[in-house]
Image (cartoon, rainbow over all chains, first blue to last red; front, side, top):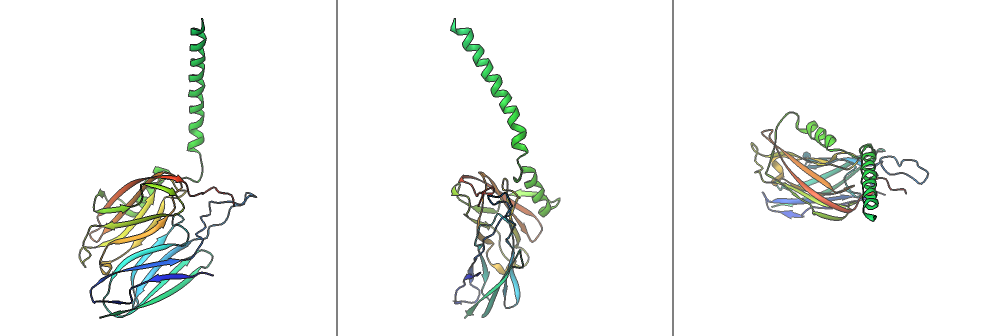
Length: 106
Length: 159
């Protein structure tokens, strides 16, 4: 069962630069490991992450096998207005998860 | 009396050692599932195209000595303002010796306020990690850091 952890400040002053921390539980199987039988374990990774702030995309990332399991990504943004951050992770085998967080800007 | 015997033994050993080294070279270069500096260079070319990449502005915080290559914390920051007409458009991170050379591409904009991203990466071997930033004027800035890994991320691990 995939689960996301999001850390966004609940409140901020207008114009503040805030840090956003995200973590999505995922094995990030590289496709380079194999079973004792010699069979290769197929690749299963998150390939894309994005964050929208009140509908506008503010951050996007392409992920590869070199990202550790349970991808942890932190980035910054400017608090301009109260509203909602929406996060989306897309990956192999139809993986698609979303999460959201709200912020009050004074 | 023991002198000539000793020296011929030495000669034999050096010859054998030389042969072993010669024999080992193709084995090492033919090893599959390992990116090469050439793959690193072509992955960088895919991002920057024909543009020149200058050294500077970018800071890559990563431990120089890593115990566990399966999860290595990494922070890239770019010393550049984040205004509408002068900002960091994207940050690209590459490795030299994992099975494939890309680590991540991060796209930001002036709204970010600060050009900094952190994540955790895998390193399959002691190697060079390269971070490249693309600015809004389409210039590219880079930094590279050498990392020593004691326990590699097990790409050929049997599970």
